Length: 253
Image (cartoon, rainbow, N blue to C red; front, side, top):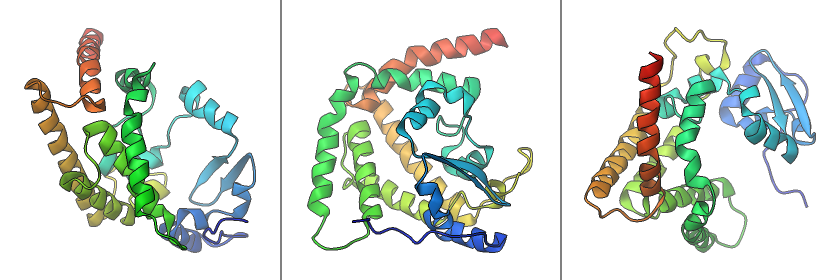
């Protein structure tokens, strides 16, 4: 049985039709052939991209040779209000320095320490599901956010602040931040990137809530009352690395 999914686009359509479909649903905007090939190329007047479905190829791109496959400037432009210059959208030396900071948290057996939080989030997700047909995407997003907050900040998604972040993120997704002129057109980096008022507002809400969480955690770490989670581990690891990185930057300057 083939699971239900959005109807995909077949044949060549107009630029206007593609833009409308892209805004409505990225999966249905792309042609069906992209989901049946190990790797497939997609060209349109707005986008030239490749879809990789081969696990070995995905591993090559993301893990073995990430420097040979830089992230798209269009993606960076679309996600800039929320992600800024974070590791998710940067390239080159900047990305490598950011990876140096976060990599030790996932090496050796450290990731195993987060398994209880992941299992608890999975159990909570199963408990929320009900028999019958339902839209699984919101439930998957809910579960993913629950894992992040349990593993990183030792709080479930039902916690007031984490629930606010999740709701704000859902609103940010609905604002479709990647679908804008800067993301769909070859926009010069020196020009201001146009984003909708809703995109900027929801991104500011999320960044404000996360900043509050990080600030509170930094205070708890200084006072010696922080729980043993990824936020504490990253702080312990990042302090000397960031200090070394600052020294390197100053020396290079």
